[in-house]
Amino acid sequence: MVTIKSKREIAYMEEACKIVALTYQTLEKEIRAGMTTFELDQMAEQTMRKLGAIPAEKGYNPGIKGVPPFPATTCISINDEVIHGVPSKRRIIKEGDIVSVDTVALKNGFHGDAARTFIIGNVPKETQRLVDVTKQAFFEGIKFAKPGNRIGDISHAIGEYVHSQGFSVVQEFQGHGIGRDMHEDPGIPNSGKAGRGIRLEPGMTLAIEPMVIQGKPNILELEDGWTIVTEDGSMAAHYENTILITEKEPKILTIV
Ligand code: MG
Image 1 (cartoon, rainbow, N blue to C red):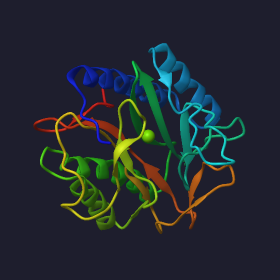
Image 2: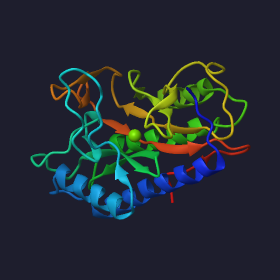
Image 3: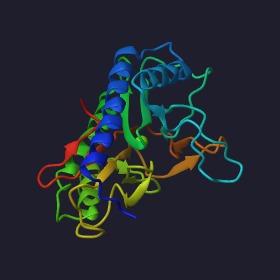
């Protein structure tokens, strides 16, 4: 079900989303080569809790037999890992890595969700371009996030832009509505036909999240039941914000 948030609910969403934005401010400042993904995750958890939110990914149960609940505050996915990487004391962030972090804060019963890809030191030009295109794809998509347009208009804009830059989008995972639940309707694919899907209305809150691969779009799931990697081993990036549909331009809630 697609939910339309009341004024009060929007205020709660804004609060949760601001905490996500502030958490990323901390991570951006602190992330460096030599750190483990566990340490980075701890930093995110401490920041989020200090700001009064609950890390909503921690303990998240996918409801799939044999897959344990997610153990951490953040998903951390490095290089050819696309999404849902599990923080680990054995995984060290290295110079030249691209590190995608995805996290969700819960406050007053409402969720805020965003993802960023951090570049560690120097990377090849083409890797930098992948990260830039992934972020820009979000902004291309939200140009269409206005009342009267349809979800497919956003999907189409993201997919067309990414493909025009010579990269692939992930088909199997998508953006989503967000609110009292971390994942609400509608699903928001990162490619598709314009003019399809539900019409956008003021008060909808949506997590729009291009996941972009340098090579072929095919992905694989690792044995941990969580980590998604590119099949061809090429690099992947992720960028996400929670937005609010208003009467006019969309409001990005997870940027301060
Ligand atoms: Mg997310």
